[in-house]
Image 1 (cartoon, helix red, strand yellow):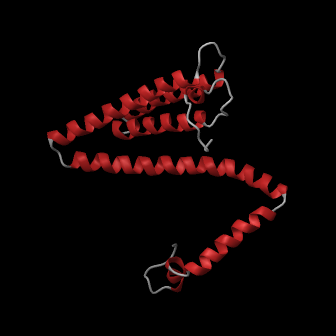
Image 2 (cartoon, helix red, strand yellow; image 1 turned 30 degrees about the vertical axis):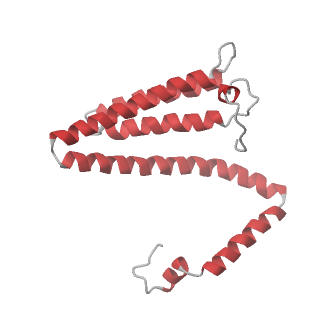
Image 3 (cartoon, one colour; image 1 turned 90 degrees about the horizontal axis):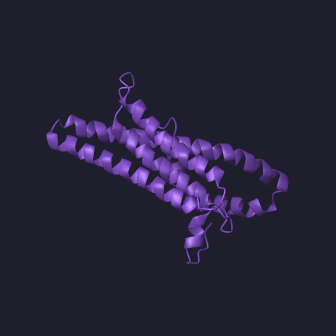
Length: 186
């Protein structure tokens, strides 16, 4: 929590304790949500769209920080085997990103259908993967290919989750046409 220096602070006890009160407040909020007017839910919908974008941005920042730390720790060891391991991870990440993007073209761009929006998102994902490489290799950025490769895989995954959330009966969602399994998720 912000401003807490040690565990003797009163606010720390609220943070780590008081679980009965927290569960009661959570249950109360959960129940009261069903009684809110539709206008409040509509406002929440608009705010949530911006919150989701902010959440994705925070995820990317955390992922970049973790991969830069990972890269720096392996480079700091200054041994040939760690450099080869870094190279192997980069190559595997790029193979995964571009192979997965190719599979997405098969799954979400069925032949004989006009799926321009899906193709746009897939092409932008691949272009972003190449842009990350160019930016990471630029001398003024002083970057590394490991974070760029991991972010490329993450972008392909985010593209997949977005496209797979299309309705089952949508003609451009070829993923659900190939699957005969019954699922309760979207």
